[in-house]
Structures are given as C-alpha cells and as structure tokens.
Amino acid sequence: MSEQSQSNLKLENNFQSKFHSNIQSKILSVASFLPSNVVTNFDLEKIMDTTNEWILQRTGISERRWVTGDESTSDLAYSASIKAIENAHIDKKDIDMILLATLSPDHEFPGTACFLQGKLKLSGIPAIDIRQQCSGFIYALSMADLYIKSGRYKNILIVGAEIHSQGLDKSTDGRDVSVLFGDGAGAVILTANEVKNKDTDSHILSTHIHADGQFAKELWLPAPGSAMGREGRITNVHLLEKLQYPRMNGKAVFTHAVRRMIESLDECCNCNNVKLQDIDLFLFHQANLRIVESISQRLELPSSKVFNTVQKFANTTAATIPIGMDYAIQENKLQRGMLVALSTFGSGFTWGSALIRY
Ligand code: ACO
Image (cartoon, rainbow, N blue to C red; front, side, top):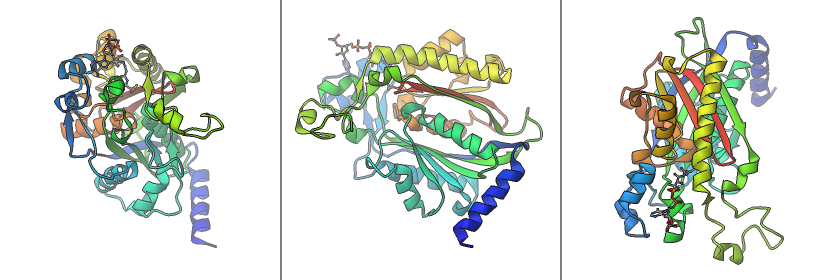
C-alpha cells in the first residue's frame, strides 16, 4: 500500500472512531506577518488628492503596510504560517490540511493555497482557497472546525493573507477605495482537543456563516473575469475603464456591515445561550473604525473589550481577524480561558461570526 493510501486509511479510521466524541477544535497557535514598509496618510497626500484629516475622520486609519518588492500573497502567508507552526511547537508534517483565505491571489489559478503548500513543502495534504473576501477567515475557521469535530483531521493550518497595494488605483480616481487597504497575513493552527469541561477548556463553541449574492456588485473587482465578454477576460477597453481596480458603494457597505455584524453576534449568543456581557473580548473585521464604533455604541460594548488594529494596519480583508488575535495576545488583551467573539462582513456580501473559549 502506498504511503498516501496508508495515510488516507489512517484518516478514515480516525474519522470512524472520533465521530460523535468530545473532540472539539482548539486554537493552538496564532501568528501574523506585516511588511515592514509603513505608508502614512501623509505619504498618500503626496500621490493623490486626499488629506490625513479626511482619512482619519472617515475611517480611523493613520497608516498601513504596503510591500515594496516582488512579494506575493503566498510569501506573506508563508511567513505567517512558519511563525504559527513554531508557536504551536508541532512538526509541520503533522499538519493535515491548509485553508487559505484571500481576495488577492498569486495568480488566477491554481489556488494560492497550492503555492503556499509548495513553499511549506507539505506535498499530499489538501490545500484549499477560500474566496470569501473579508469573511474568508471565518468561513475557513468554520470549515476547519467541522473537519476537526468530525474526526477527519487533527491539525489544520488556516491563513488569511492579502497584498492589496499592487491592485489599487492610487490616483485621485481611486482614492475612496485605495486609502482603506493594507497588506498583511495572519495564521492559526487549529487542533483537535478533547474537551472535558465546556466552561473552561479551550474550544470553538460555534461558527455561523452567511452570504447574500444580490449585493455582489456593491463591492467587487470586475476584471479579469469570464463574465467580461467574448473579447476576453481583460482587454484594453477594460483597462481604459479601470475595471481592473476594486469598485465600492461605500455607504451600502457601511450600512450592511453594521447590520450584519450585529445580527451574527446575536446569532452566536443565542446559539450558545450567552449574553454579550459574558464575552471578554470582541474582534470585529477591521474595515473601518467607524463601523466598529457604530456597532459598539449600538450594543453598548465597553471600549476595553473591543480590540482594533485598523488604525495601524488598515483593512487587510481576510487577514484582519488573525492579525488582530495575534496583536491582542502580544498586548496581553487575549488570554487563555477568555470567551472571545469574532464577527465579520465583506464583499459578496458575506458575513459571519464565531464564539471561542480561547
Ligand atoms: N480623500 C478625500 N476625499 C475623498 C476621498 C479621499 N480618500 N474619498 C472620497 N472622497 C470625497 C468624495 O469624492 C466626496 O467628494 P464630493 O462630496 O465632492 O463628491 C466626499 O469625499 C464624500 O464622499 P462620500 O463617499 O460621500 O464619503 P463618505 O462619508 O460616505 O465616506 C467611506 C466614504 C469612508 C468609504 C464610507 O462610505 C465608508 O466608510 N464606507 C464603508 C466602506 C468600507 O469600510 N469598506 C472597506 C472594504 S469592505 C469591508 O471590508 C467590509
């Protein structure tokens, strides 16, 4: 029997024996990687018609990281993954699956998870791209959680990684979008953990994911794409119309983001019979500080319980939540045993939440 078939048989046996047991998913480690190049609002004033005051007042963002060299999204993902593997104190060969969430893939195909897997030298295990934009990390977490609870896999590497800076219109035409985004990556290792006491032992209590495709074009990147007509996925006409850059209805995004993140937090609490007051820390997708403030005001969340990174790193879409977790750990705001709520919203529209006993 080949090594691969033996490994599949081992996984099948694992699946049969663990299904319906007390196996839950635990976040074993967290890590992030941010490019070192800091781009401030004052730097943007030099390349487009904008001001530090406008950006700060509308978004809360002061600076972001933008790569300067030829790095790709899988390079950032690799740096975050290596740190997460080190922090987990496991052999990378113990990883059973890779889930990578991104909207800025290395190439149209194959998926960026495959490029990451190649760099990690982890041939044979499944490597899957999640294309759910800002909600990608929570979608990946939800899938990984179910794979682990079913007994199918033991250790799953989940990564959110983005390089936006190479795909933004940095002229004044694109200023409403380009000031919002930064580059970065975050990674976690999710592992199977036998939970004896659900009130204290580390595990994911629940995840909730949603989408509403009728709003797909409120925040999107038209080209290249198979729907761009018979002349080709991207033509000179498309380039002249700047269809290779993201387009956003900012007001619609703002309104739906506030509504859906509140709804999905509510869903999380109801599902677990938990009150908002019981939650120790809230990590919202970091699109815009004003969105997080609006949610916090409506739900009367104390600012000490809401952790933000958008001021320094801007919106890194699929990476904001794992980056936030990593910095919250570094700043001692996220500690083992705490009850943590994650909530996100993004293009699609997509949204979701998770409740975690960290
Ligand atoms: N600098 C200076 N002026 C700008 C800029 C800029 N970067 N961008 C737009 N403006 C101008 C506009 O041209 C407009 O000028 P006009 O009045 O002369 O026409 C003016 O500012 C106001 O524009 P609005 O779009 O009405 O500004 P608004 O107050 O709605 O703020 C913003 C725009 C910040 C994008 C807001 O709609 C928002 O926060 N939306 C949420 C979008 C978001 O967070 N997206 C992140 C990605 S999605 C996600 O992660 C969930």
